[in-house]
Length: 290
Image 1: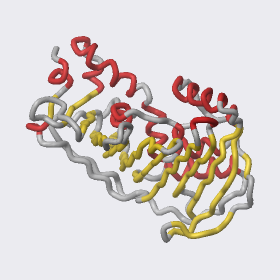
Image 2 (image 1 turned 180 degrees about the vertical axis):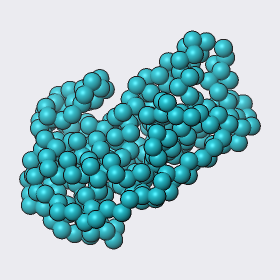
Image 3 (image 1 turned 90 degrees about the horizontal axis):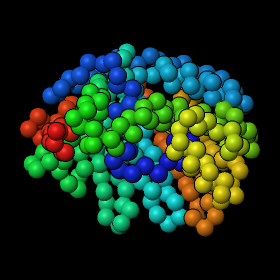
């Protein structure tokens, strides 16, 4: 249910620290390029959502990188936009992320970079420390008892490791259709110059995969409270079985209509992420002190 999440800026920026444990920490710098992507042949796309989800999950797993943009809107308000480029090669992930929202009418923008097990975050509205716009965060920092008070909020974000990576790759959107049913016949069309097949369906809310995620369970409870029992979706899949777009639209009672759109592209394209200059970076200790 990742596409239903209203992420505050700090959590959204921290979320792509996901899946970094066990990789080499580049400390002050470094970059990462994924291996050349495999060439995917055209495949026969099934009509059954469960079989389609299995096929798309396999194809996603074969690609080393993707670019994702997700936007959501609740009532008359923009809930936010997340754009991310995620690459992987073996056990070394890399990502760049940008999150925008305007909860008070003022645009708030957070940028994030991930290289191995190190994450850099920048709030464009304020510096992390005087003269240092970037905050450097690592798994080791989160486990440092001297930084317990400062690291608490970030540790909560890191607990969302697996689900965050799935959102960026499209795997969570695909998981949402697996227990679903089609409500219309699939349609062949072109989306942004790419031949795709459009699937329209719904999934019983009770069957959506939430795992052990407490926030997903809370969101599901809020949707049920609004009288919604089914999760309507539209999915566009290209001829190689990779997702290109996922859309959701539903009415949540007095809260108004909720819409969310995720687009996926640049499958397999090189992703290069470079750390910011060291003199523009501070660690958690510089934010809250040891």
